[in-house]
Structures are given as C-alpha cells and as structure tokens.
Image (cartoon, rainbow, N blue to C red; front, side):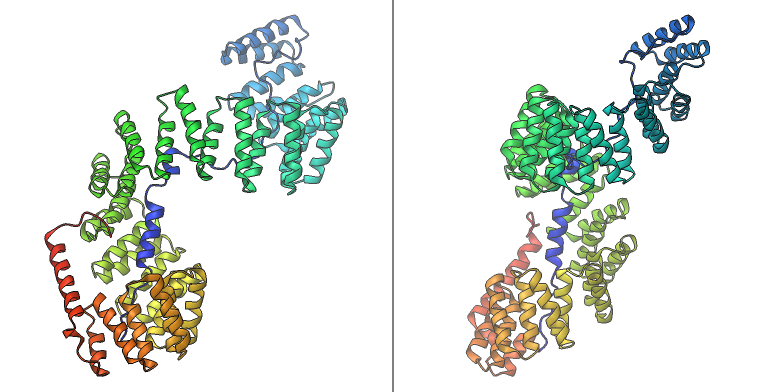
Length: 616
C-alpha cells in the first residue's frame, strides 16, 4: 500500500517555538531569579563614618589625621588623601594612618595602593587586632587570601578571645574549599563571641557547602534570633528554601524580612513578587505590587508586573489596558509593546497583534523580537511570503538563536520550497550545531526532497543530541514502518516515542502502523483505535484502520474506515485505487464523498477571495 506519508512534528514544533519565542515576561520586567547561594565577602574595610581608631601620636600628624577624617566625612576624598599623606609624612610609623589610606584607596578602586598600605599595616608588631582584621578584609577582597589569612592569624595571636577575628578567617577558608577547617575556626569564634549574627551566618554558609541544609537553616535562624535585623541571614534562608523547592517557606521568610527589617527593600519585594508568580499566587503578588504603587504611583516596573500577572491570569483586557497606559507614558518601550502584541494574540485580536508588531518594527527596524514574533504569527496565518521576509530579517539580526531558523525553514516547507527549507535549517545548524530541533527539521526537509539516507542521518544526529526527542523518535520510526524497512527499529523507536508522550495520538498511530507492518494485527488494531480516540478526525489514521480491517478480512469495517478517510481527504487517489482493487465499488459516487469534495472546493475558493485573519 502506498500510504499517505505524514510529516509528524511540524505543528508540535511550531507550538513549542511559539511558547518559547513569544515574549517571555521575565525579559520584559527583569524578573528576579531565585536568590543565589552567593558567597558574601569578608567584612568590609572601615569607612569614613567610623571614627579614627586612634589619634596619631605626633602633634602635626594628629592635626593632619583629624583634618583627613573631617574631609572623609564631608566626602572630599582628594583632600582626605592629601591630609593622610601629610600625617604619614609626620609620623611614618603610624599603622592607623596607613589603614585610612588603604581604606580610601580601596573605596576609590585603586587596589594596588590599597593592598600596599594594607600589607604595610601588617608589618611589625603591636597592631590592634581590629585594625588587622579590617586590613585582612581589604586583602581578601582584592584577591590576596593568603596575605589576609596571615593578618588574621596575627590578630588572633594578639587577642585569642576576640571572636570577630575568627569569622572572616573561616569564610576565607570556606572560599578555598577547606570546609572542615572553616567550620572549626568559626565555631571557635562563636565560643568566644556567642552573640555574633555574622558568626552564625558564616556557619550556615559552611553548612550549605557541606550539603547540610537543615543545619544551615538552623544557623540562619540563630543569626536572626541574635539580631532580628540581620538581612543576609533572611536572604540566605530564603535561598535555601528555594533550592529545596520550598517556595512557600521562602515567601514566608521574605515577608518576615519586609515586615520586621526593611519594608522599603525594593529588590527583596520584587523577588517576593516573582515567587508569588512562580507559585501562581497571583493575589499575593498583586497585593505586594499595590503596596509598591501606593508608595510610588509612577513605578513603571510595578505597573509592568501587574500587567504580567493579569496576563498569567488570562485577564487579557486588564493586561492590555495596563500596558497601553504604560506606553502612553513611555512610547519607546519596544519590549513592552512586543508583549502587548502577544497579549492581543492571546485574546484572539489578530489584527491588533499584527498592527502592534509592525509598529514596533516601524519604530526600530532592528528590533529582532518583533520580527520573529510577527513572522511566527504570519506563519500561523499561512501568510508565508511575508512571514519569510520577517524571519529572514530575524535570522540576520540574531543568527545564533535557533528559533528564527526553524520557523523560517518551516515557512519554506509549507510553501513547498523544500530546497530553501533545507538551506534554512543547515544555516541554523552552522550557528547552532548542537540543537536537536534543527537537525530534526532538516530531516523532514530531506524527506520532502526524497533523500531518505539524509533523513536517517539527520534524525540519528537529533537523537544523539537528545535521546528523548519524541518527534525524532516518532518520525524515524514511522518512516521505517511506512517504507516496510527496519521494522524492529520502527517498533523500538515508536514505543519510545509513545512512552514519552502516551497521549499523543499521532505517536500511537505510528506505533500501531509499526505493529501492522510486523504482522501483529491485534496489537495494531488496539493502538490504531486508541489513536482515533485521541486524535479524532485524521484521514491517515482512518486509512490505517481500514488497512488493518482489510487484512483481517473485515470488509465492511474496512470500507467504513476508508470512506471516513476519504470524507476527510477526498483527494487521496491512492485510496480510491484501493477501493477498486478490492472490489468495494467506486466511492466517488457516494453522497458523503461528493459532499466532502464540495466542502473542500468551497474552502479553497473562500481562501483565495478573503484573507485569513485568524490562525488555525
């Protein structure tokens, strides 16, 4: 039998691309990602807000030292540097003056001089442990951990019961992956300073590195109990909960922080809102956004997030109204308008979506997102020539993105320009050789060009890159079965596809067809019937069903299945020939087939006289 060759995967591919390409809200509003378990640097060096540790001993040095300190407080850093240099000239042995110069140069980004003065502070003996600890902070922050450890050991030797010198040492050891040593040092510091939130915070970070998240949470809890305003512990605790997919607990921690510590921390509130969206607690997200807008009604970012939530809730009219108001204030916000186009699509207002994308391109012809979104929409509207124009431009503007190449190739396929389709996919592969979808679609183009050896190679490459690529498994398995070759592989491949997507009726049909080609008619009939129940009206599946019935000598059932196939596709001349071969009379005279032909003819005439305004 010359069965109708189905090209499975195209519609699924376009839908998958549409979901990934049409505006991703996190790009629009710079959504905060989950708070990373980032490493916190050791305590910073002293700033000008702190009083000088000691007055310099010489009278001239004291005068210049105090003048430098006053200049620091007034943010006159150039004068502060000059005064401290004068103080150092008057008292070349002063560790205190050098420490201020180290801190100032560090604050100004001059790390070379900052390191120089910090190391000079550590030379000799008699330094204050606090001063040594502060200089160790500068050295650690400038990539000199061993020098920093040397100063901290010196500070600990000067005052072994000063816990604040142990904590930064522990953290430097943690950064060097010396986890056991780090924990020992921090616990020793906590023995001497049991009320240190930073000590418990560092202990929590060490526990994270050791993989003991329960102990980490306990340490962060202890840090918060010691100092309820200690921000790093809240953020680290929320991060641990997120890493364990305990988003509700992360939300509770961030809410506690905003309530008890700093209700105006915008970054934390934005992250809290993103967690609400992730957990689909849109009411919670909207409540936080309303509070932000009460404090600042002109907050465009908060307005965008409100629109995002409305979009997630499918309240498209509210989302569209919100974005329209934003664009009145900021008409040049291309990403906002691009998302507006997506919302028009979702609300089935295709003319407005087309208008919105086109206006964006009018404002900036180089805005690639709107080219590709417009191209995808035109593809779905079957307006392939214009789709190709915008997809070509999207490929030119963003050649390393695989999606424009894929949709461009599919547009050529639908226009029956198979060579151009293969070239589009090959160009995409040149920029993205590891993209399995590109190799899969290249295989479908080769199939249209009757290059089956190349089909096999392309599909095998796709599967080597992604062994769970269900479309490639199904396509190659169905192709083997339909050609009556490599039937064992056909069965294996289609079984794997169905295992990945058991409710995909087309995959189930492919498996049934492989069973049929294996001679397993009972299994084939079971799967094909299931495919009919999953897909409904598909001419190829009904044709397969009729073929199985014919093999089982169930002529009436076979004739009914084939007539249903011809109703769905009256142009199938091969199936008409099958009727004649089996003496089932000419179905062309059947009233239901004649009605089907008239419907097809009328649909073709209507599509030529009226432009399509809605995608299939």
